[in-house]
Image 1: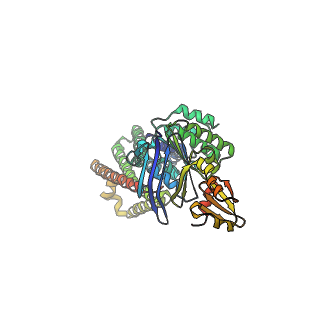
Image 2: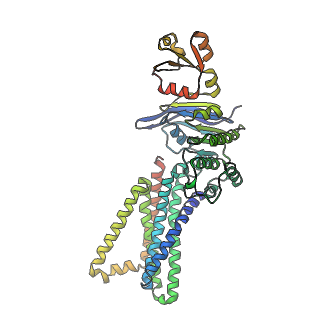
Length: 288
Length: 216
């Protein structure tokens, strides 16, 4: 039976002018959940609520089947986190970062940390973090997040600003991490290309609400986009339209069953879609 | 929690070379003073280091955005707060120890008659440092290091002004109050210690409360 490592149910957090409204999704063991949404959609807030860094107004978060508030510290010991920025002090060396984290995690593995630093080509000593490039600090963040052998990895824009080679290195490591059912990743990212490469599921958050949480392959292979003129839009049944966006030259209609749409609307072109296009159509599409 | 304390000690250690350099310059500058004055001024310097060390680690934490990361670690919030208080205590105790050694050296060089008075004044200074720390830390948690730093300046200005005003009153030079302040009795130190302990507990719980409800 599939083991759910992270289960978020009806998560709610209200701020003046913004609310995270009933966010629900689950991350099974051995999988990577891509967590996408526009800036300010509530992705980081969701991650902070999962880590119990913020008080929530409603909902539940279960990690490894346990409530994150009741067993917060015990659960955080089994979670690795990589944020979009380096939060280590810039006068530290990677060795000093290891010294600090060794005192925080009982399961900290110095050998693993050193081997990850070597794998990423990072110096252990002799170079302070202020001399590191963004790519180096992000790789250090990944090494630090993995060296205590976590079961769940939370990544918040961990690959943004990295060049394709470094990104590829990081993605490869993440895929190795989830090679068994005991591990899972929640990967918040704007770089949908990365998610198309490695994610198993995609949860799309828009204005604080989950629009969908689906297997990635279903989005890429089952969903489709009808590219047509504005006049053709009238032919398409409302029940088939997930989202629509009209531009100067074409109208794009998102459908959840590409093959059925192709059979039903003969003469119209129904293409495969991408996560980025789905995000744009939902995010910038017309209200229906 | 050990890791968080190690982090703060590492930060303090990296800053220590500047403080030690300043300590040497300061010690040379007051070399011509009497042994009692030398010890007292160095004691005040050590007390200031004890108070300021936890406060400047706040600034470093803020610059690095460390708090966001720290809250994701398997360390309870109250322990994250406790570390700042522990750091202050460690440095104030170290100040007391170094000051004690300086007094012992001074006594061995012929100022033995003043030893008791100097030790009392040193203990009083460290307790005053503890009081200052207890007042400052909740402000740091509530307003952050940038705004709270203003509060430190205001506090120091206030204390300096009051001291200056008292010093300018000639009648006070030989008054019992001034003598008491300069050479506190064991009872006065005990009272101050009790007051400092009560205040630091209150301050700690207030800081935990502020930190617990804060966003990052």
